[in-house]
Image (cartoon, rainbow, N blue to C red):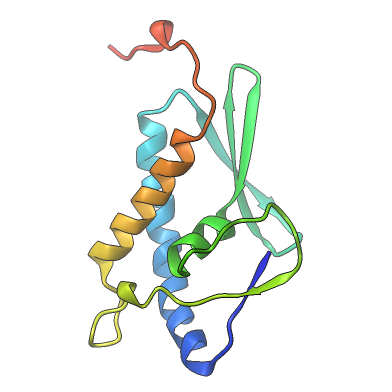
Length: 135
């Protein structure tokens, strides 16, 4: 699903948030992968919107997530991914991520992106990890 931004102010706020959200998401994914049994790689995609997806693999299992979908979950209030549908949905910017000076609130942005990454990983299939303990 493509987010539909409905005002000029919302566009400006989205422009402020999207790149920092991407940076924090990628950092939080990297941190989470360091502690995970899943191996992650990024793949470039061209449709429906050019970008990247995260491909996670573990013992024959694979899961994919569009990085833009994660960014939308960070930047917009109650955004729900729809797995590739091309319809547009009106969205509201999460203005709690922007401080009173109109700048990114990095602490809130990091917290929200970390929670979204943790939620995504928590919903992956679990496996018997006895033999995968780190030294």
